[in-house]
Image 1 (cartoon, rainbow, N blue to C red):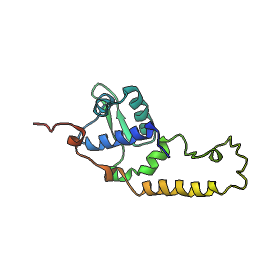
Image 2 (tube, helix red, strand yellow; image 1 turned 90 degrees about the vertical axis):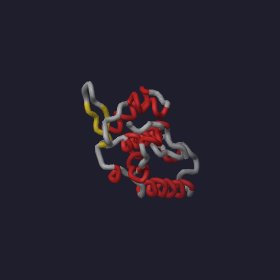
Image 3 (cartoon, rainbow, N blue to C red; image 1 turned 45 degrees about the vertical axis):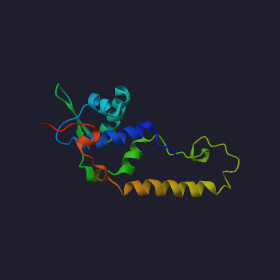
Image 4 (cartoon, one colour; image 1 turned 180 degrees about the vertical axis):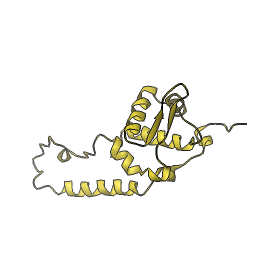
Length: 142
């Protein structure tokens, strides 16, 4: 199983926002810190804002900040909000044409594995991932 870059970036944006909780962050600085596309992070930030994980402040000195405390943001919930689907195999999709689906036992095992994966991530929150600004290559203010 592999998560999309979208979910990876979503978790990283939240980690950066948590590390910079003393102020608003911008898409531009976050893209620079991670060396990723500003346009892609804009989509990620919009989704995180719509999902209630980030709060956007408009205006000239605007930016983004966490909308919830880090200990209230479960990693499994973030992934469920950002992953397009968890269709591990064809039989998980609406257009399933697999010949053995009616009798196959693999689907049960994979559903159980997926539930264990997301269940484990639900035990962790953004607070468990907290880093210092220096961990992002940011020098402390003099």
